Amino acid sequence: MAEMMTLSVRERAEKGKGFCRRMRTQNLIPGIYYNQEGKNIPVQVEMLPLTKLHNKLGSSRVFHLELETGGKTESLPSLIWDMKFDPLKSTPIHVDFYGVDLDREIKVDVRVVVEGKAKGLIMGGQLEIFRDSLEVICKPLDVPEKIIIDVTDLDIGVNMHIDEVKLPAGVRAIFEDNYAVVGVVAKEAETDAKEEGK
Image (cartoon, helix red, strand yellow):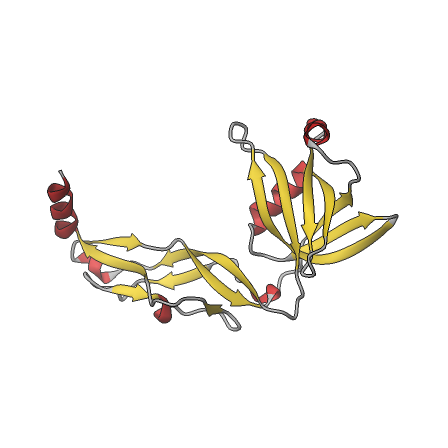
């Protein structure tokens, strides 16, 4: 298992839109740390380390949040629960952290990565990915970086459903309906559907 990354944040006493705007001019991002008991602590974090960590881990991988508060520093296993971005600059403007218990399971979305060449493609079919992420439940340290789906055996007209997806040890998919994740469709059928829609 790879060593967990660390992000340092500081508690902030000031609140309000004006203060948060001034923070951003100093490359500091306002945020909130939430724990599982419902406590929330306003924090501030430097933009560059936050961006690097988010690019590496996304919103589903756990890391050490080093929270400086009251002259003390705590190391808290956490997730980036939500991050809002400036629509013009694509830079973060607010972040929510969520503290987790490493021994308790959590629900997260994990991205899907398709590998292999489906045999249905050789026959002229087209691969369709119906879900680009899957909702799973597992302990925080068991959250996979990605879920790899091998589509080599898929023929034309065949879908792979969620109950057929092989997941890493300790990871379970959450679903009520056994939905299709990927499949191979006939190009003729797709063309006919488009013609009918004209």
